Image (cartoon, rainbow, N blue to C red; front, side):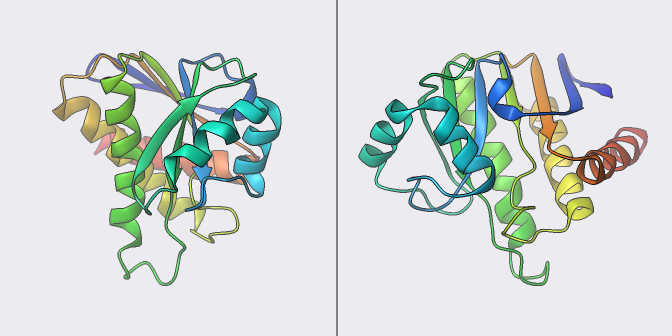
Length: 179
């Protein structure tokens, strides 16, 4: 599924983020940036030791912020590491922190002059963010960024790991673009 926001295409697909041939992929990292499970572990394994070496020099990352490293052995040139919120009740700052993850990742991509970026579904794994809520925050933030900022980004892709997550993003995309 695809929609446009300003001059950018925002698209959804089900697949493996480590296989994306975009300028950057976004890593749903933990605060240490030193690897973990889920998307984070998969990116570190596929990208090789160069990513970890650069992450060590970054000295971690705050929740809602993002930092960039090489893509190592990945098809993407860069990895933008962002730390999503752990979901508590949806009223403890989680939506703002999740929105900040997406906004900061896009800002960093723009600062580097990147044109294509791929996001996973941030915080919906072990951090427990409900898919349908995370999808709405992610897509609304990307749409707003593309409409409000003079961005050089031409493609924002969400690479979703299974059908339930894809369906949640598809439903959110329909609602957001039709409102």
